[in-house]
Length: 235
Image (tube, rainbow, N blue to C red; front, side, top):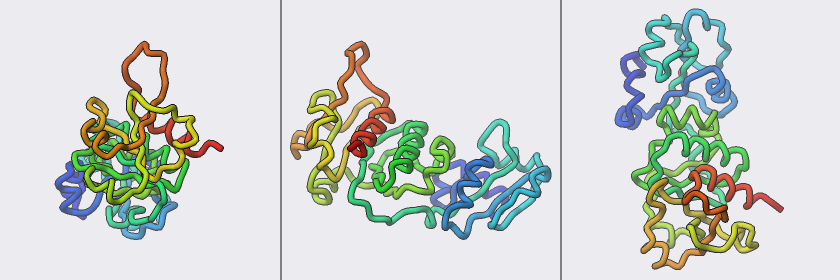
């Protein structure tokens, strides 16, 4: 891929057009090396020419690296990765569904937690932040290579796909309830608006909540997901 095209991968429409996304920094590229991906390409600056990689390697100038990099201080190591070779299509018994989440840092953190606990898919509604956004990829710390991700999954498709769906709301049973672990899909809503209440009520999803002190009116989405994932794994 030409450098001008690599630079375009900062934009979602070109990631979709070319089918590649950017992975930047030594740590993330080393994580990439551990995967089964075969068709990635690595770009390094001249001072990183000895960087070990099993992929096709291109040595470029620091000036060119700055042009294709998404960070203010490039580390001199960057890769382009085919989206089609990411860990997608794996079947897991349990899924979390994220409805229209917008914050790249939230999604990256959630992917990192999913990779840590393992065997849980991540379903994204239409309108979610792109999981291949460079900010998501960086904040996932390489977890994006290890989580089964499905994009553009309609909210309306969930009742026909899953038998037992749970939703985190402000009013519900505590996460510590034994029943919390008995669901096959866990629904989390948009950072500001949550999940459409009429949809949750119409399908009578099981409701759970994370109790707090009441001094603030909301909990960070990634934190809420992390608590739910921990509770699912707790014996």
